[in-house]
Image (cartoon, rainbow over all chains, first blue to last red; front, side):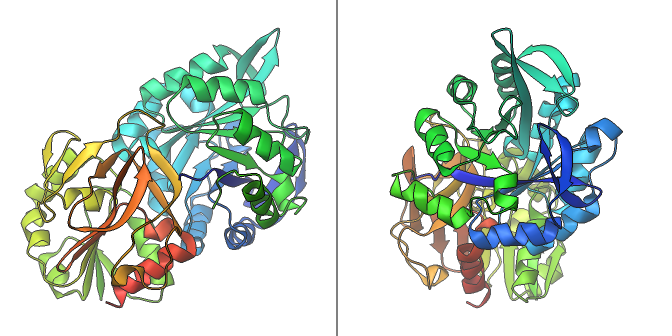
Length: 250
Length: 192
């Protein structure tokens, strides 16, 4: 049976790991390569590295860091943040990343999804969607959550799939950093509307939140950052808990 | 020396990193003499069957790979290209394994992406592994079960997770991305 994936996310700024609370008030939480190795040893199923300031400051993803990570770890990893062109994609893929995550650049120029899919395959393209619940609708936000768009999250997810996305990384801005649980409604709406894997993100604070997201939505994976960084919930303990609750994990 | 076949498919860097982590020297090459002289050859790949086969054909790598006599390990697309024919782009492949590569019917999420367990494992490639150990898959096409099947995985349908015919080995999953289990499988191959 295919296992539900637990994915620690490492937010990177200036080569260091950080974690935002509702995308602000960033505090330091460690060296990315060391943290990545720790997660692998603990049984993380995949890793995501997001250069969170890259989009805003128009910086390129740290290719050297990606190469170091690729040499050290033996599970799949995704790199995102500031990836605007097929050249940016090629740089991180050649450095050893398995997938790239695109967000603002995909909204601004949706053909980028197809270009990456054609060159590196659909499995390589993760479309990250930051969404906020406003006036009864889940709306897509870009620029690290600073800029609203006209897009409804579910419509954008379906379009991304049509264009060749291999996976959707869905973050609820309302839940991110709150530790109050994942956004079950929009996660399930999107995971039911597309036939590609959806990674639920934003809001994990307790083990039961992971159980809920896998029991109540069709999410294939769940992502979290700070609870793993600070060992609030150790990954082995989380996986044992999920196994005990009959959720298939590695 | 371990040789990794250089062609127009992604994922080669990961395989190179994994082989080096295990302490083996390796070279990424499309040079016939280097490939023939290597003690083991790895034929990796993430990509699309038709463009990969035309690239291999243009450089006569298709005939070269088929004629290798040392242990060869195909990974992911590598396994699919070692079969007879792929539905992806209606492509004639190398034909090392007399097996068809088909697309998963859309009865569940496609691609099959993530960790899944192996059953009915056999052969030296899986020394030290147990039934139901998990490895990492990412693929939308699969090779049907056949006399060459070394391990089975079940996603939508049961399919060949690993295959072997004489000196040709192949895995649909990514040993280079399958943590400790994957390293053991790679090491088993590299020390055959």
